[in-house]
Length: 267
Figure 1 (cartoon, helix red, strand yellow):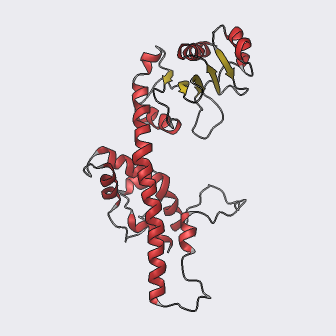
Figure 2: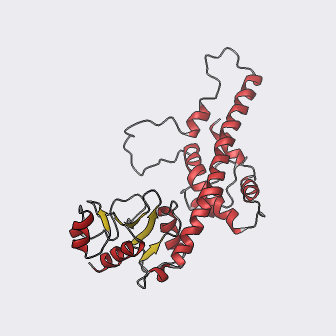
Figure 3: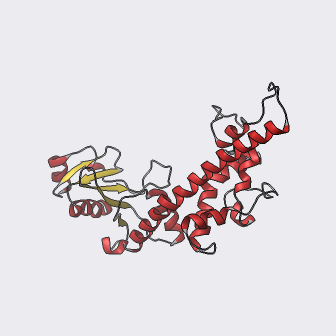
């Protein structure tokens, strides 16, 4: 039953699939051609709209890739060492548990069909949740980050500071769009308003999405300082804080946050 989810999604081409997995064949010859149709319907556009393929690949990477890997015996890590813990909570495991247990007295075709329907409902619900997240949240956030990247030189002539006009999940989009748009030089700092405190933040960009190392952290001489002490050290009014690791700082105003980012570039 682990392969049931594959029947609600389609891999458009071998090239697209191999972008994520090093596999020599499609995962299942019974894969139906519904993925792009579903995404187009959620977007309310034609299937040949560029956002359909963009979302198709994003949903595949975030949702289907792991299922394909499990079904094809692809290890998550390039190592022969055994895992340090077992994860039986992922979708493939949950669908697998819907198979009739060997101790179940009724092993009839009817019971198998009931289990099959439960599996399809589970897979379909989670698949649609993934699609709708990407349609309603992921794609709009990507558009915001793209626009902010295009306007980066308006924020600062260096092109290394990006103002996030509207806060949204931006980190992964930034890395992907920098590659797609051939951004040079790379963004070092992102400034945005913290809507909760109505203050402004200046955040250093990491070297990679999952890294704690920054391309250029905020200056060491600012780290751990707050308020007046920080403003005096930075010679910038309105400073609020700089984290001990230098990955983020704050200022009471947009101009102050921008000044912190600009000064940090020179230190």
